[in-house]
Length: 361
Image (cartoon, rainbow, N blue to C red; front, side):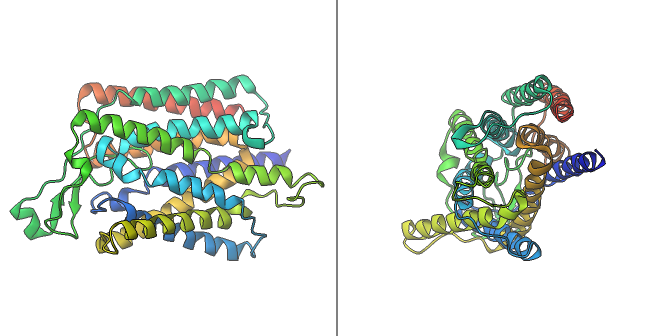
């Protein structure tokens, strides 16, 4: 009993670490020009893979299951839309939309056993359903929160100072706003996103956030599938580790390989003249390390709490952290109505997380 209680405590601590870093990991690049986001994603994923390599060495090189890389492919494919989302609907709204669909996909697939996984039972189904529903409601509330995202503009004074106004990272890991950006390519042409109307930006950003969320929510499916099959002596995966963190290197390798392929395709389309942003390298690498820490903690939370419990908590919680950044630092969410909606959503988020956590008992 003591051991079980200790594991639960470690699981909730891991969830808290995951929430903190997911809610903050895009802050280092908030004021950095990342252009169309392709180069930035590659730098981010390089950092993610580097962190997983260190963990793999610490874990003494556990068996590498290639299927786990497929989860990384799904995540990297969803993540390629992050910068367009940030530029259209902002960090806060974008993250909170995709985190809702991330929650739905991850929770439902593990709870009901989709895609060949074994269904996961929770001690208190009612509380789990209520907590999950509240987390989804929080996402719906955020659909009505209006964000302020600046469009890219150039002026003589800003160019002399090395800055341009651009809505770079507005929607990443749970809440944030428009901003001033360090431009590495002076006098660069406005992107296709900047040419869209406000309405078009909102619709496009919401659609991309939904698709990204569904792909993000599928990230753990291959790992859970392997673990389930590892308990069956007739399966190819018989004997596979039951500790989630032993699959991180394979999953993160899938992320890095996929982002590299996308970057090479991008270079080919650009006729070997890609838009590179040197000033985004170190902040982007820092962002990737923070994301890696957050996701490693999520793997640990999955192991100790089970996905049906960890998903509603971790996908909903970062919104609170990002909202704090968005309101108090980046000033993206303004106005009494928006702030009241945000406060209500935060209350619902906390209630959902607490109730979901109690469903584990």
